[in-house]
Image (cartoon, rainbow, N blue to C red; front, side, top):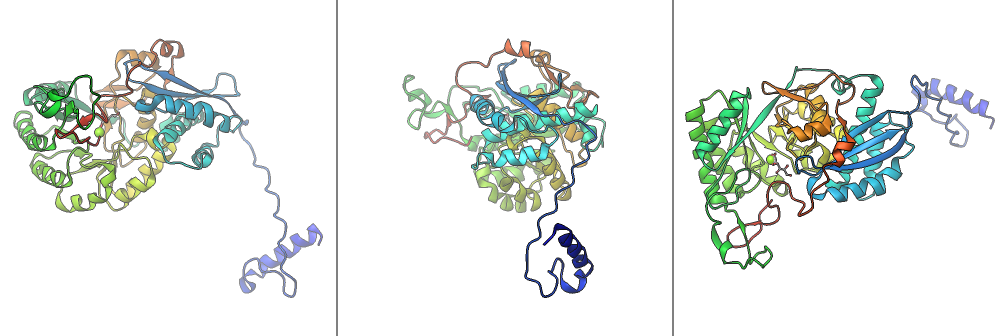
Length: 465
Ligand code: GCO
Ligand code: MG
């Protein structure tokens, strides 16, 4: 059949579609698939710009290993920056980028951000891991940065424009005892913060977020120093019982001393049993927390149904999440109040803006994870999203130390407890590569903060995390 005939018959078929069924062949003719009409070329307003190189930069201006991605384009001077920081496994992320993502992406159009995410996602067949997602995040944020630079627009405008002037931040106050926590909280309040996260120590225990006091509790001293930490040689000891008894007393103290206006937050860091989590939440209800973070580990996601039934305390969860299978049920079943994902850990800004939109429809607010092991690039990209997200809740920290600020020029500033975006195109942060090279990542165990994998109960059982 001539191509002309096919086209004629196709349009005749469309006219008759109501009676005959859409695309039914003309009566009496054998069914024959017509050749697909060629897609008309896409009209182009802007020149095609392609990825020329993908580079990984490791830097640790304040001894925190940061993994930064630079996407270089074939247009002179145009590049973008993304954060791929998985601080505990920085070198593995670097390999994933340099050896696998880079060859996969060279030559791709920089404006195909969504397709680059989707195709990178399946490019390793096995997917959904923190390493690969962080690698993808580095590229993803850099491509959004490039789009903003091309358009001459700050990222928050590309994402829909501001719904607020700045992002309220929370201040970190910790202490070995209640008085020290109170004193540190006052520093944050005096600096203009309306939200303070408070963490107190338990004597003798390696408590998350607070310096240790007293000798190590339990079996630690018994172990020969030469023996590696293990079930028979625990050194950093943690027991949840004394901790869950301490926390309500800390809040009682702080509410008495600091009053009711200041918003208080606390991070359990997953270290308790389910029944303890329920009891802790109930015991904290009178103290009016803004949120209680990570009362359970992600392995126990299904328990949030029970927890939710028992307490009215606002729950923040999710810094350890990687996959949509982990966070979608908690959001869509309204089991949490704040989604706390570490944006680079799920693959970057592209998936994060979908999570923010999903959460809006279920009354869940965003409280993206923003510790020191999220670079200023991540904070800036996150801030852009927060400024354009109706259901924003809170921004974590982000008061960058001087050395970090020098490497990451244009990092957003904090004023009066708010993080404020600059109006520079893209996310606004430029990395000083020469200075970054002056801060090589430190040798030694790849830990951030606390002894992951080496903190144990008195009897030697390793704890999560
Ligand atoms: C938080 C945290 C962090 C993490 C750290 C892991 O800020 O809420 O839980 O302190 O422990 O980012 O690398
Ligand atoms: Mg946390």
